[in-house]
Length: 536
View 1 (spheres, one colour):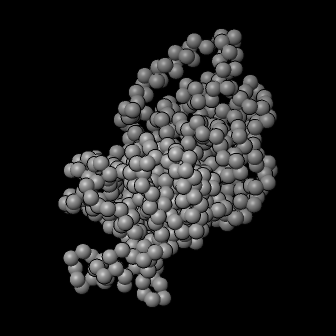
View 2: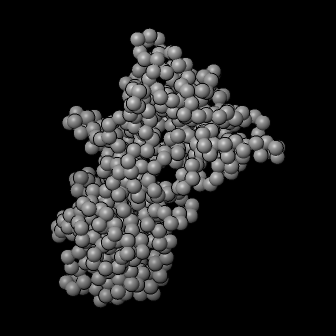
View 3: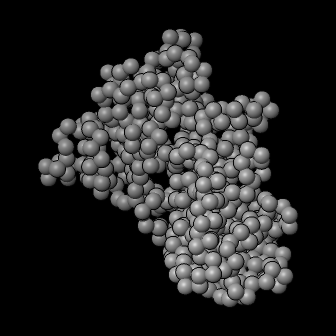
């Protein structure tokens, strides 16, 4: 998509529509009836946005022309409202997420009688401050007052119906109200309540309790602000939204908004912003607000978020072609809300990563089609505990003659002994500790072997250092679960056992099991033969 779009041409198109409908009551009625059930089309035709940075090259007040991820964001918001599902939006800075909520609120206010829409944020000035275009109600007014007059309620009077933190539609009894700080959720019931910068609220548990009884749908929108808080816990407990997939029952639907989703955010833009933050000693702030890294300030992270970012499409950046080896790693659900996760790599390139709920014994049948499609030849599965059920499922398929003979199945136990116990952890350095002295088990060794891949890939991509392709890792940017995987890979931390050996804590306080990352660890585990799985 070309960016910026042609705002002049769009303004001309809108002007022609206004002229055509001017004074034509019949056409106006038909248009309003159409827009009621086609909200995104209404937004594309009439909504505006504001960016003071554009002057003088571009107009500050611009017609809203959504890029693809913004259109999906609006679709998700509408689905949450219609299905009465709570939503959480984990966003990077400056992608227009709050504007999308404003457009949805304006549409509800105009077209759906009796709608009560709430907005809340940490500070009252962020909700409504006259003359401040950053305030949410300024964005609401900007859109309503730039509509054709015939699109506003007939009896609407600014002096009466536009008050501080309140907009009333006198024609259909709809309203938009605002609240701030610990008062969020105290004023009454709402159809939908948008909580802006939710991760930065004070006393979020109090607000959680207040909103729980007062709204059908709560939408949390925020950049990240560390781990273990209410926003982070809700994010981990939620289900990431996928287009054309049903909303989760009894769970929060999660929408991920990455900086790459914006057509104007290039790698050059990212590198420049990052270098500035690093020079100012504010890299942790950059990591939270741009990379959506919950653990930016957490010590002992095994795989840093910046290394993960560098590995996305590293095979393209470094001109490495996939070879013939096809390996899968299967993490097994351990009851409760845990999920089965499957990762598949082509050489060093991770091509597939997905998860699903269900029993361990059913997982082989669910994963089989994609493994066949991806040409998998070696499958490693987590054999500890419920892993026995997975093996039983594989045996059942073999007995039925439906398990592909080309796929060899191997158990993998994270609690097992380390590989090459007498070898130094740094190859060729006899003074470094031996594997058996450094790592408490195979899980720790496998996580750190994966860590080494990411470090070397980072150095190759960012600094041009040379490594054998077999030592690197690349994450295919087309994977549907990439957003989730990135977060999970940087969740695990390391600590030291009572005997001085390295352990892995996959679930620091406030987090849940990183199933996708576990599957990737198994997929790249040191058990896998390194023979001929790449070509440079």
